[in-house]
Amino acid sequence: MRPVILDVDPGVDDALAILMALHSPELEVLGLTTVCGNVPLEQTTENALKVLELAGRTDVPVCMGAARPLAREPVHAYEVHGPKGLGEAQLPEPEAVPAGDAVDFLIEGIEARIGEVIVVATGPLTNLALAEARSPGILSQSRRLVIMGGVLHEPGNISPQTEFNFHADPHAARQVVNSGANIALVPLEAARQLWLEQDLLRWHLAGREDPIARFCAASTQTVMAFETQLYGRRGMHLHDPLAVGLSIFPQLCEIQPLWIDVEPEGELTSGQLVVDRRPFVRDDHLVGNQVKCALKINVPGFLEVFLDRLLQ
Ligand code: RIB
Ligand code: CA
Image 1: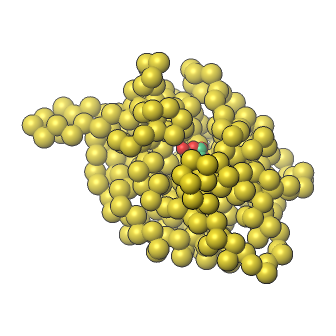
Image 2: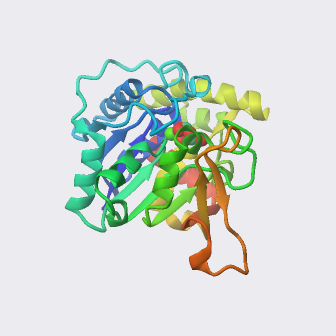
Image 3: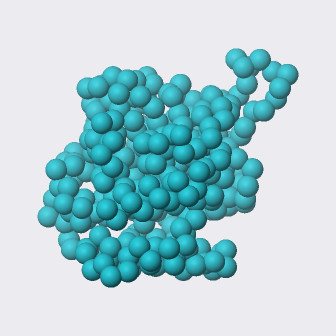
């Protein structure tokens, strides 16, 4: 089993990713660290606790992280995830409480198993940047970071040129990208290949009245309504489950090494990925850091694994 820490901002797709990870025998979920993102920190933390109780996994600790980005004002995505961040789902108030500080948990978790821990980051990267600042080199002592974030050349989803997680905390994204850690990046170009048709989900949920099936039906309604309005098709993209899937089945994605950096400033560009593809420049002169970028996804293969694990 691979030890993983999920750094999350639930968020509907984060919640689906958490359930997928918990239902995957290949992963040992050491804990969840929560961050301000889709909704404020208090809410992402409450949602993480609720999802763990839904899954019967209150043995997994939730540690609270950053209540705001390193420098920018918080931005949220209520229009996508709903006012409470889990769409139309109504889960009971959690009995468990947060177990501690996210940055401490990340540092101690990685230090306890040098070279073994995979950190799957599906929200703004504030917690990871704070961990690196507090313990320089700690991110490079993880096995790897699997990061959902950034957009290479397609239109952004929060501004013309930026993706939400990198836009929300561009300074953190830049610090993590340049930390020297082993990074697998899941940009919007990859996530947008992974479309879950509403009819397919409904087919898998048909006849099921269990709490997880009811949660999947209710939580995805808001996101699907939002994306249907955008794309004219009833369904949703599976950004964060793809990051979890990549940590289990890297063979489901074709990977390309890219040299990237993140623009932290600019009214229109803050959070933009900068990809250095100059063929005539030596690697050590390229900007930023080399990451393994997921480009082409085996969509049917991933959907099969996702639905099997989510709804086992
Ligand atoms: O841009 C999509 C990403 O931003 C996803 O992780 C979603 O949950 C939001 O955090
Ligand atoms: Ca997320």
